[in-house]
Length: 421
Image (cartoon, rainbow, N blue to C red; front, side, top):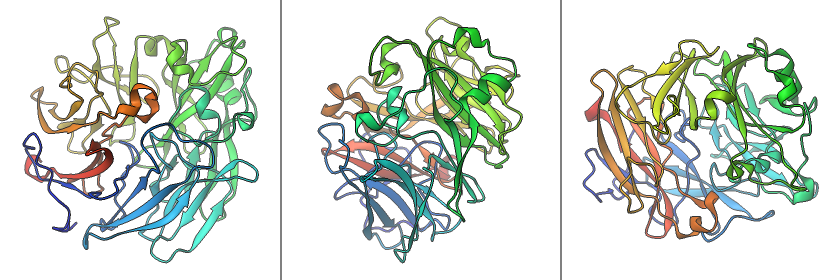
């Protein structure tokens, strides 16, 4: 990978490694901590550029998909989409080559979201039936929960459509859950319904506790090997005639479910009794058989980095003394964890800046390698407008992309971790 000297170096707070701003002009956002924004060859990075930073987007408001050439320092807008929200943007994923870029858009005639398969180098595009959250490692399939329904439990992760086009999931839905799309044919089908999970998951879920409520799919992720999927579900009960953003009502219950890539062998990895203690951001270990997460596992309000097998076994702390935070990823070397932090978490600095934390698992030591501002005034009124770094490794596990909010704009940075590895 080559990074052009046209990209200015980031030097605030004296980073311990080289850091470059690859959106120095109009800014941008990269997707999430579990998805590399780097193209398969490493030459390009794809980001989403918002039309404004002052409020939540409205339906029909477009944002720009931007392709950045890391070799030349040049960028170009390759698409304008109306299928986005401010946390994960348009859910941009790369396929198996630099000729395949996937992201969401919305048909404003029907207010139905769909996935676009774009060749960003030629402009050739294909409309797929389903939406995208995560693509399989071999680029053949895409999985997604319902992008319209996501706003029922939390703003920021799906797409914006008029409220009357957002269905509700009373009881155990047979016609909503985890969808899968074939990237060649464009055909989409419901692979596992919410009812399937409640009926088939092991250990068995006590359905009597949840029949009088609403359940929605949210995050979903392939493991690195592509043979297993993680699927998160959120349940709540309310008398509100139109529930929105229910995460902030503090009455949501969570499941982390795993399954084989064909939807079989459904397991409960971490259930509501554990998530009630407070936790966030589950991710696959590099081995594809274990999960990492932040969780107050002792029930005392202290966040730890925690692990569990795909079936819930081997559950416990990864580290005994170092607190959890942000969006953690286990490096394939097995020695290191990279994570960031939320502005209000104890490991942050209290001034709107947060650390990129590089943790040594064997020695239980850590260092702040980068400190970046994430403070956006709009988030005080609109929490979904917050800026999370979401540090994400390139496929060579040397470079990391992350977000910040500097000089009044969301910006994307690349850090070179080679000296620490």
